[in-house]
Image 1 (cartoon, rainbow, N blue to C red):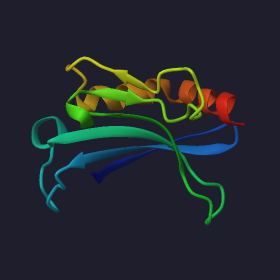
Image 2 (image 1 turned 30 degrees about the vertical axis):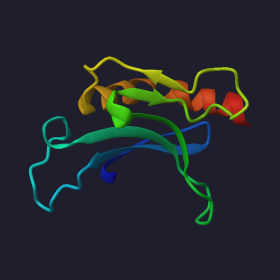
Image 3 (image 1 turned 45 degrees about the vertical axis):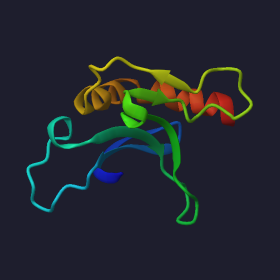
Image 4 (image 1 turned 90 degrees about the vertical axis):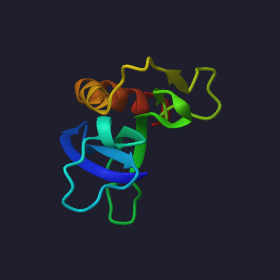
Length: 118
């Protein structure tokens, strides 16, 4: 998948967060690209920015259309959890709807990451 757009969010609990939209196939430069119409697969992910130049960004939650159906990956959950890490969504989850959902709920997912990992 290819980065499509980056949306800076606020600083929350001392860390910077952003959304990253991604698509497949890669858009051509200058192309008027609509992920809902032009992409074979698409998604949006919530990321906590690394605090130092050498610290990696941390993906917290991802919504995408891989595996043939829209779903949400709860990446923040530790591997040894009893909770389901993948939530299957209905086919109505467009790129725009995924982006709107994460824009409205990103602080909740940031809190869940902190609760499970710090």
